[in-house]
Each structure stands twice: as structure tokens, then as C-alpha cells.
Image (tube, rainbow, N blue to C red; front, side):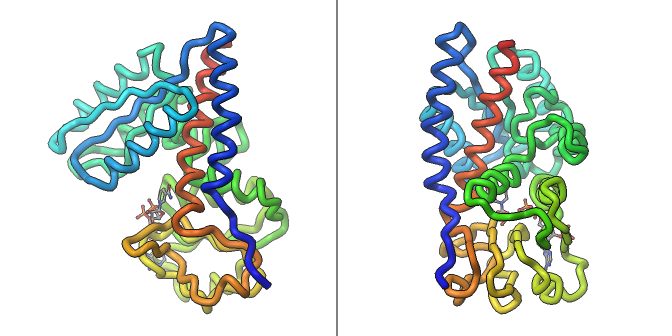
Length: 280
Ligand code: NAP
């Protein structure tokens, strides 16, 4: 058996073509050009790269963007002021606050200050609660992108046992809620989980979202499982060790080229959706 490649890069590229058509249509119908505001606090080079990739994606589909770069010593109050300004700016449809922010900032307070209709990265407490309850809301971009990928490749979730390794507010927790809403049976693992190997061995679908290179070992993963790796580390490795998996599992995401492009795609898709709703 050779594992199916869940090609996020290709899917995102194809979906961008559709997004471009929809953006053009919105503008032709008299709508404002959809626009995403990005906020980068500090000078972390990886964060700057991620933000630039999001801005580039906006450009590719004909959407506008507004880049706000704030110094590393920015206070919570200063960031909140910036977010309020963007909430009130009718030319901005979506707000992305790049995570993580410097430690003196209350990140949760800043995420929660983003108005629900502009929360296109799905980071607010209210948006999370609505999504988890199955109400309309923008999902957290990375798990939303993963769900799009799974659906595109017809990966059956209903009745399957999904094991999510990681429980962060932007990834593991919303991922678990989305899989549960798709009728999977979900186990969520974290740093205090006892015997992670035993938990992963139960999985039909494994989601690696730990942020540690190859923490999840290939030998823990069942034959025939579906493997989703959100991690990306120096040397092109993810959070899941891939040794020999290509011939044992049914499907897997490449690293890079799996989850990353789908995260950006979810973000810009949700920005367009916010713009469409604002134009009604
Ligand atoms: P995070 O906030 O650091 O959370 C990591 C999670 O992993 C925590 O819940 C932590 O448990 C858990 N964990 C840490 N060590 C563990 C261990 N030994 N055993 C079991 N669980 C452990 O990270 P994140 O923001 O969710 O990101 C996770 C990964 O996804 C990273 O590799 C990140 O780069 C990647 N990511 C990718 C994208 C993308 O677009 N491709 C976007 C976002 C994140 P505790 O809660 O107990 O501390």
C-alpha cells in the first residue's frame, strides 16, 4: 500500500482560483474590495514570514491587505487600541493578530477584542464557543483548513477514532471540536497525558499539533490510519515521525505542503466570506 498524499499545497492553489473569481464577482457587483488587516508585534523572523505569506495570498486572489507592524515593547493597551481601530474601519473585513505576541501582552484579551464578524482567524472565545456548539462562526484557521483537506480527500470521519495530540486554543481544542462535530470519536492528548503511545495506537486519524519535532513516533501509528501533521521544524520535519509510514498508512499530509497552505487558505476564504456578509 502506498499512502495517499493529502496535498494541501495543490488544494490551496486550486481553491485560490475559485476565490479569485468570487472576489472579482463581489467587486463587480459593487462590493468593496475584501481586505485583511495583519498585525505583527515584535521582530520574530518566522512570524514575519508567516504574515508575509498571508499578505501574498491576499494579493494572489485580488484581495487587499493592511500590514500593521508594532514594536516588541508594545503594551496590551496599545494593541487593544489598534484592534479597536481596525474593528471600526469599514475597509477592513478580517483581522489577523499573529500568534505568539511578546509575553508582556495579554494575548487572550487582544484576541477577544477582535469583533466576531472580523474574526477570520477564528481566535475569539465567542467564535470558538459558537463553532463548538455548531453555530455559525469562523473556525480557527489551521483546524478549519485541516477539515477542508479531510473533506476534499473524502476521509471518513464519522464513527472513526481521532486522536488529537495538542490542546492549544488555536489548534488542538478547536480541532477536537470540529472532529466531534463531524461525528468522530475524539481523544485529546497533552503534556500530562499518561502513555501517549497507547493513546495514539487507538487512532484511525492522528493529528499532530504539539510543536516538538517528531514527538509522535511512527511505530505508534496504526496500519491504515490517516496522518495529519501540523508541525514544521528545521530540516523539514513535522511533529510526527514519518519513518516507513508511506507504505503502512492510508493517507498522510506532506511536511511542508500539507497543513500550512490550508491554514492560509482558510484565513483568506473566511476573509472573503466576511466581506460577502458585510456587503449584504
Ligand atoms: P502550542 O500552543 O505550543 O501547544 C502545544 C500543545 O502540545 C500543548 O497543548 C501541549 O500540552 C502539547 N504538548 C507539548 N508537549 C507534549 C508532550 N510531550 N506530549 C503530549 N502533548 C504535548 O502549539 P500550537 O500553536 O498548538 O502548535 C502546534 C504545532 O502546530 C506546532 O508545530 C506549530 O508550529 C504548528 N502550527 C502550524 C500551523 C500551520 O499553519 N501549519 C499553524 C499553527 C500551528 P499542554 O497543553 O499540556 O502544555
